Image (tube, rainbow, N blue to C red):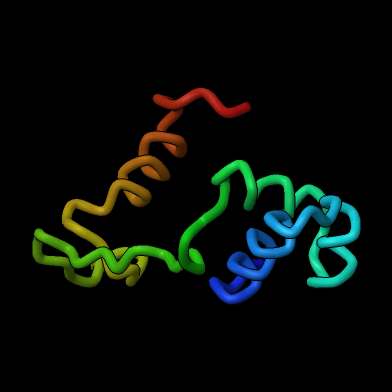
Length: 90
């Protein structure tokens, strides 16, 4: 869970006033380790969101399995090789 900027500012303010990390954690409602990380500068500045990945190559439906993939479908190729015995199975 990301800690909002307001809470991080409050942690730094309370630390500047001399409160212990344990007391700050209780007042703010975060863990002591989170307080320690904020004061050490080890925190994510914003909530983590997965990057948007736009395909650079054209994708289409595989005629065999129907998956939306870049052609040729590697899964179908692997399954064919597995069935023919070219690929060792674990």
